[in-house]
Amino acid sequence: AVGLLDEVEFVHYDGDTKRSEPRQDWMSRVTEDDPQYWKSETEINMGAQQVYKGNIETVKRRFNQTGGVHIVQRMVGCEWDDETNEVKGYNQHGYDGEDFISFDLQTEQWIAPKQQAVITKQKWEQNRADKAYWKNYLTHLCPQWL
Image 1 (cartoon, rainbow, N blue to C red):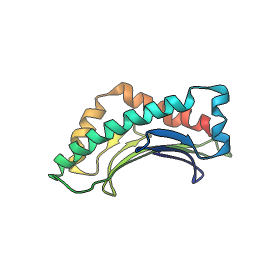
Image 2 (cartoon, rainbow, N blue to C red):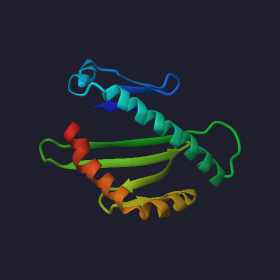
Image 3 (tube, rainbow, N blue to C red):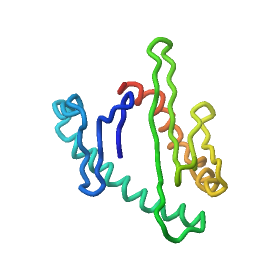
């Protein structure tokens, strides 16, 4: 996993060593306020790594794939215009370089451009708490960090 700010890497999680680490000096200082920050980030990323291992197997079955190398990608973030105060957020998932499912912040609906993602869309649409979380995260929490 990689965290970017203005296209500059500021945090990195290495799935082999299972460690989250700062990539910018200013990120190294977060432990001044939160001594457990890197331990917590590492645990979150380790959990996500396990979830994605399961997710890739599920998606492979939906595409009738049994082997080979496949890529699951997720991009979550926000953009904030400091002149207009406009915030744009995104939560997008891809599979093998193509869009799989994404959250439309305006309609608060999941968009499934692939037939294989429709079952995920239906499942996620039922989870109102999760949609409320993403709306809050993308419109409030994420811009606060900027």
